[in-house]
Length: 536
Image 1 (spheres, rainbow, N blue to C red):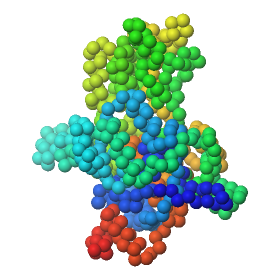
Image 2: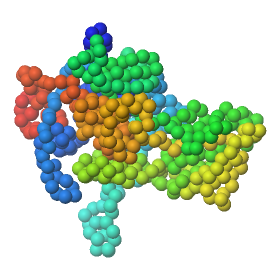
Image 3: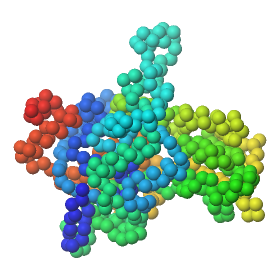
Image 4: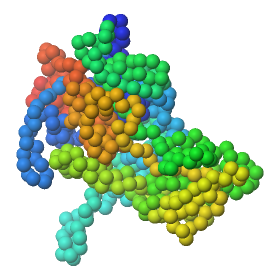
């Protein structure tokens, strides 16, 4: 994939990606794919595929006002880019993802089949599954499909004075989409992408980024500004950088100074249970743990601990238990989520977008299958689920090596606790990331809710080609930014912008015109009949 470029004897990458997780893989794969067609159906391509890069009128869903945006159409290029990836976990894609799924012993993903990072085909994961006869590894998401109302049923509800249903419906035509893949199946599909685009050999380096700067470099690039990325192992130069990190490092609330080996954040989990608890269980002594958090991770931790032999688990949630299939509502997940996305993109301000993100995600939640798992553990007495409850105070006893924990609900008392696990997620505040301090100082940008106010082209600023993917790109991608769908859509937008920055332009010869017509036909741009006539 890489075509090394040397400036004054120094290698300067076209694209340097920080992070080898799903977002990093999505960007690398998309930059290698010359005929992307994964994000939208044909009709959605016509209206939404880089609507801000064409010149149709855009109607604000609130005011009805129409605006015409500046056109800046960029064509696909056959340029062989020099892409390099830095990952803090290992010298391969998806290393941290694989480690966490293995540690948590997660059998299936939460995401439906059309959430994946394949840029070539919207149903790429589904097609891969059936092509390899692995459909038995799929699990149906019950309750999502088959609840649509007929016209007669809607009128009957209206005559009865009942409130119309506000939640979206998914009809039987999309049933195949509402299955979740097994963890090995998804890993195999990602491996297929790495093989297809030759992303395994010398693409990813195991390095932790410490600083990013953008400017002129003496004896390297004195005409154009480039990036200098310093890591724990050296320095790299690049024309563009993609930040595909997962967010801020995990932090434990009110981190104690004692008993630090008996308190763990879920994202830093190495094994379950801990060696001390395993020793107690081997000695046939009771072991008690507390899990803090209201999302799916907390439920998975509680279930894993019980399956591994922990005597009793207390699961503390600061709010009520919320149950839904996905992190966001069906209106944001479905195959045809046009209205919500259009409303988000035409919001009047970043503050309005931030409010839409918070409303859509609405805190942590567990899936219906895990709700049943928790209920089963509660019925056996192995799990105590305490809702609307937080830790009021905790103190460490070095003699017994246990915690004394008091709760906000004083009617609840806990025995001595051997370990406390925090499944409280990670913070999203780009201004606190150590390696972005130079960028924040030299090229400051606004923030909202801890997220950077990046440009529509996914760039840090118009004059700074530092592109943001994943969770931190929420103000441009919407509530699905931290999920796999956000990784794929973000990669598409970033790839177009990178081509603009690097000056990738078609030369206009007959072969290029034919490729453009083929691309227009596949993505539904302009007149499909004209494009087809040119191809034939």
